[in-house]
Image (cartoon, rainbow, N blue to C red; front, side):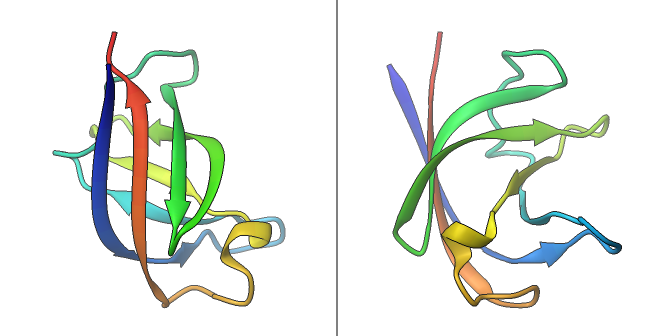
Length: 90
C-alpha cells in the first residue's frame, strides 16, 4: 500500500558547479531505505508538478529530495514549496 507524505520546505542548493537543488525531508517523514545508495523511489510533486525520483538518506537519517530545473521552473534556492511524495510500503 502506498504511503503519502506532505510538507512545506525551502529549496536549497549544494554549492558549486553542478550542485543539486533539493528540499530537506524531515526525519519523521523520510521513507525507509529500500534501495542501494540509501535511497527510496518515490512519486513526488513540488507545487503540483509531479515526477518520479528518489528520496536519499544521510547517515543521520535525514532525507533529501532533489528538485530538478524542469520541475521547479524559475524557482531558485530560498523559495518555499509544497512537497508531496508517495512510496510503496512493503
